[in-house]
Length: 299
Image (cartoon, rainbow, N blue to C red):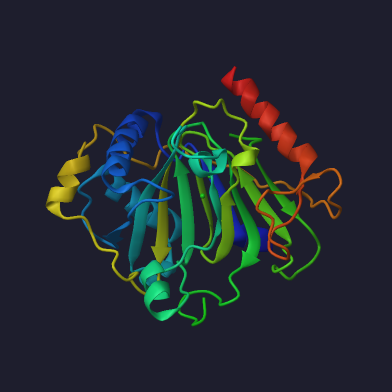
């Protein structure tokens, strides 16, 4: 029986076979050049059961198959996917803008902007194509407006920790996932959880590139304005078909190892973007340990 924390977060290493990482990197960089910029990129749609015309579309389908390989597949409508690239940018005034992303909830942006309705994907995921950059931090804080349809309302072993307390109400929050980028690593979490990329937790060299593919699985509806790529758009990124598999290599599922969340700010890491009642102080000893391990691999 799955534990409470296992239903919130999962991680998997080597999700992308090394032989196909170059293809996905190339398509993702072309994607970012065409539709990226600022803090995010335009997203596109991949319907369940559709035929993949690019490596990115194939990956979106594999993410669906990984997380819904049972009777729940009937609930799936499709997947929304996009690319995030974080790299040094001398035109931006601070590190956070070029290396990180503020805390947020994934939602149907058009529905929120037009109608004020918050609706969330069933599952949110991030898959890393490079080793560099700041970690994905996901708190066990749920959107107050709830999962999908309720009105009102990213990222080897030893590189992530689950911080947990005994409080059963997520709004405190009770737990957090810190996942440092590693090529081929796949992270998934419940689609209505608070998450972001705190730049101050990066332990990579300043010139590092953080490249990830985000795939959100929707079961309630197709997000407003998110449509499938046209043939002309596919040709802008196309490196298809690959010689080998896009995903589905010998993935290594890593166990999340819970540690006690610091209750006092002293001795812990308080994020620059601290939100009272929604984010929490992270155990500094664990963050520093993971940062040191990551630097050791890069040297």
